[in-house]
Image (tube, rainbow, N blue to C red; front, side):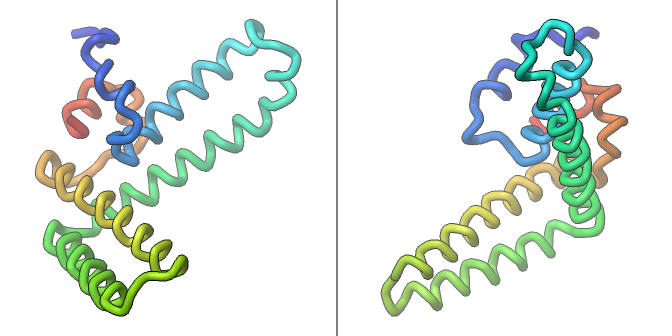
Length: 146
């Protein structure tokens, strides 16, 4: 069954709700396709090709880091970490908030959103496969993240 743009349109448009893994894969695919068609780009773009290649390496490393963490952890460990973060937020905000406290609480809340997303993914699959596997089987990746 071939993929069409309509089937993944909502995932591509809603950037603010996009899980970390999905944004990594989407950016990786875009960069890869862009690098494959360098003849169609401007001179300015061609000067940045080495930077784009380094970005591909970083995206692959980010995906692997998340994948290893996901595969080694359980839903209970994600929940424990969320509870620790919430306890820390409660403890530091009870005395008022300055800029540093606000910033650290924002980071912890963002971490909790990521952990919640990992919990949702964990309910869909027990382990994540390597990035190359999902690049070859996009439908399976979409089943995992949606």
